[in-house]
Amino acid sequence: MSEVIILSAASAYLALGLDWLPLIGGGAQRAAYRAARRHKASHLVLDGEAAGAVGYGLLRLRRGQAVHSAAQNLARLFPSGAAAMLLKLDSGRYWLAAVHEGAVVARTDKLYDSPAEGRAVLDELLRAYPHMRILGQDGAAAPPSLSALAAAGDAQTLLRPVARLDCTRRALPLALLALGALALANAGLGRRPPAGEAAPMPDAAAVLHMWRQADAAAARAAVIHGVSATRALLLGLHALPARLAGWALQRAVCEPVQRNWRCSAQYQRRDAGADNADLLAAAPQDWRLGFPSIDSALAQWRPRAGALPPGFQALRSSAHNLRHLQSALQAMQPAFTRMRLGPARPLPIAPPHDAQGRTPSRPAELPRYARRSLRFDGPLRSAGMLAPHAHHMGWKKITLSLRDAVPPGLKASRLHISLEGDLYELLDPGTRPAEAGGPHD
Image 1 (cartoon, rainbow, N blue to C red):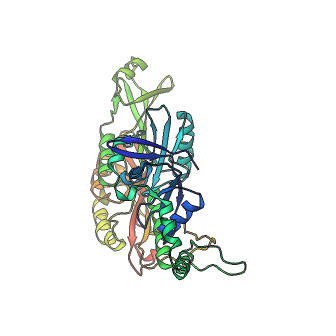
Image 2 (tube, rainbow, N blue to C red; image 1 turned 90 degrees about the horizontal axis):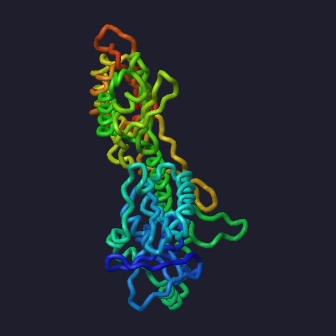
């Protein structure tokens, strides 16, 4: 087992360095104690019967000493999505912890002697969880202090002695132990069946949990910008200088990076007296300027227009969008040169598997999600009408180009914008994706 240390913070004690195992299916408490006893742990932490992971370790605590798990408290502070932090301790060591949908990620809650070791693990986590927020980096929230972690604890994040349950279970009648083993087996957590005997499928509650976890993973992968981020990004493009210190804007492109944005703009030297020094002096402070050639410049910046928190909260139905959203788009269609709303297609969801690699059927009571491709082209000013209707839209690429002089009109402007993305919605019960509204162009 890993080394565990106890630190005092805000009149509480925190344990750092526990080992963690994921829990799948029902009977979390029984499975957690079984795992802790199997690893000869003295204490464990389990945040409720529906916990997604159990933490355990070998500790020597004073009688009556109350100790909370620092990693489980981090999960309390970040109950949705994925987040990780690397914290330097007063001892000079570094503590790394990561959480995912309110559960501590296995092989984290570890102590390292150097920051390089911790950063190497963070790189591995980002490969496994591409949308994970590294606290304190790239606009993510600052990592909580030990005092803030201690304040997040309650009775459910306290370490419990493992031996106490052992003694209780030895006193249980044999019949109750047999019933407990049967319940674990029904949840897919019991012993492996004899050779040649098929293991039972997980029970209904376990199947529902497995599919909800699969839906949550799909929701984390979906980037939805919504109204405020769309409006903020468009306002930023409106404010982009068309001419600056003798240089003229040619094209700007904004693309999402995880849940933030990365933008770049190409400028061409127009005035004979214009030079790099003038552009560097006039450029906004948040720009990073490069000069690919003697007459061209490339500006790069990160807008403050992040995506919505991960999840499919309050998605509108395909029937609602067919009646209301598409009507609103039809009203503004004359102001665009192109408007495309693709057909509703089922959102790809990686199906869960039980311990035997089988995929249980998706429960009928779970919602079904769909995605439509979007494409809007037209004058920059027209995009402002779109922003109030972008509640569940996520953008893959936004391009602003400066076109040659054209006669101004409803659909004509030198500043031309193209928005490509997706609309997320709920499929109505009993509706096939093809019935949820075909493409509009």
